[in-house]
Length: 268
Image (tube, rainbow, N blue to C red; front, side, top):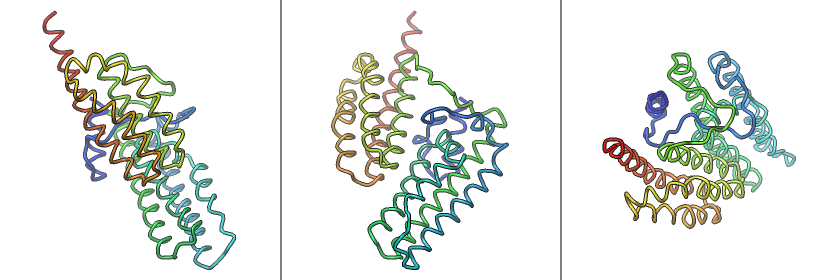
């Protein structure tokens, strides 16, 4: 229930539907203790966001002034340097993906020698996503202090029930968007493949008993629709749209599995 409470609050604050939120989300690699003590680091995160915006503005200003030696890789390097990177990745993956989308929006516009108006438009979107992320982390810190937000686990815990598997699949799909936004398409593809084999196949039997057509739809999504969206190298929004549709189906699957489990307990 803790996660559900915070999810709804975050959704309201960020102006999106509560159904698309999943908390907490595991980061790649080791997770440091700071993500479980967010409130103690808020001032640092605020400083880092301002630092990032200053650095990104500097890159764009170089480009506007006609500097041909603009190093756009710095946009990525700066983001990976800050602690705020880990804070938003572990707390709210959809906005984390937006930041990566914004970084590459600016980077690609400069690399392709786009007009300054295009570059500045991408810069504005990037800055907006950073402020949005800071707001999400502040809200998470508030609920964390009240004990309404579960701590981020430093080690992966295997789901033990079918509904828990659905929740894990949902989180992994959010991660697919993030990795695609980072332009790590092969990593995103591997994550889709592993999620299908390691998670979805394990609950197929139970779900077929409830809605065989739903299982067929999700199998197609995992093996055809989503992989094609990734391979076609469309926008992050295109990939996100496919995943949101899958998450709606997964929400129905979870409801069916929970109802089946309740009925089973009632019988016995």
